[in-house]
Length: 440
Image 1 (cartoon, rainbow, N blue to C red):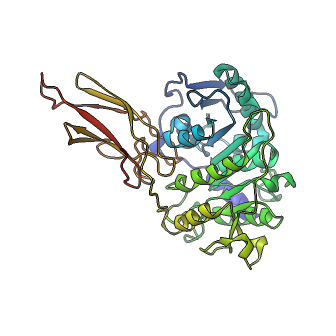
Image 2 (cartoon, rainbow, N blue to C red; image 1 turned 30 degrees about the vertical axis):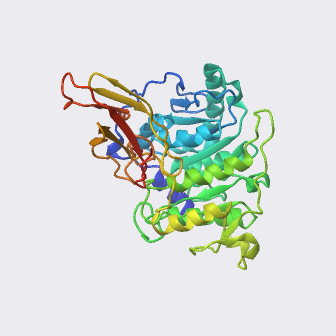
Image 3 (cartoon, rainbow, N blue to C red; image 1 turned 120 degrees about the vertical axis):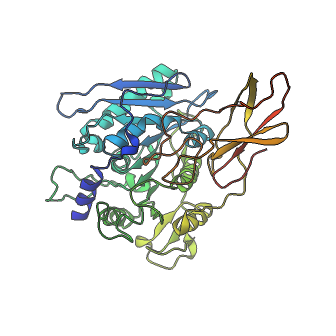
């Protein structure tokens, strides 16, 4: 268990200079976005850091069926990156499909402060999170936000938080994706401030995926992130040995940065939400079906249907169905999950003077990389001209270390400075996903 404690100590210090926007610079939260902020508490057991929660409500949703939580990691840079989480078009696509809200917290943790004071949900962040759902439900007119199921995604300390929430509230969690961070299940005398969680039978029924980078102890055995892999193995082994619905997807390209993980995380959550969310917010959550599951031997690269698996199931990686199993096999090889479907076409293209604006939704499988602008049937420009995504495939909104859009947020807007005065032009906008497929 020392490995888990060391891994937690490692990710508590994560911060990147690329994410240095001040905490008081927020994207506007006008409908369909809503925001609440709570000051730090001095009451023992309550959250000692200020925090704000921003939620996106799918336009036109009459009733929400769930909430997807995108939880950043530890360190000042990662906390700041949470400011844009609810504005991510790709994550909005899966939320809209399932009539879910998309919630992104941003804890105002000073860089050298103990991240455990929020990433362990028992230290006040669980209560603050649930309070935010009630308050945001009242603000948005969706009171059901306080009672619907949760689908959790967390990075680093956010993975520790998401896993902890799944262990504390298994009857509320539809599924949880744990990127480079897991909760503690066994006491460690070297890190007594990290309290182990209790593993209940109900928690074994929550679909979970551990997602470390290969340079976090798999292929790179030393350095600041080398203990992440042993921590994931310990957590996985404790869960799977009791029959938990849990898998591991090692990112073959990264260390602690999130990279291309969303191209498996979003389809995986899509399958879990399709299986588990009730049709009405008043109905109970459905159990995850296990008959379609595929299994893979631990640390191997091929999965097979559960019924034909002949190995040790207590050490096998659990995958919810054939489609995810096949995507998982591509992901752990090179993250290049195939996609044969083009993105949705842009809508509401408007021209005002030299300015062209439009609207678009992201491709659920592959997100949005860029837009092509045509004038009079000929190529005019790409938006953005050059992608700003150092941590994975180029995305229209850019991509921070913690899987959130860059600030300032990209706009669907282009100024045609070469248009001839007095001449009428015809414009067309084409969406391109991150696999290079073009829309109509």
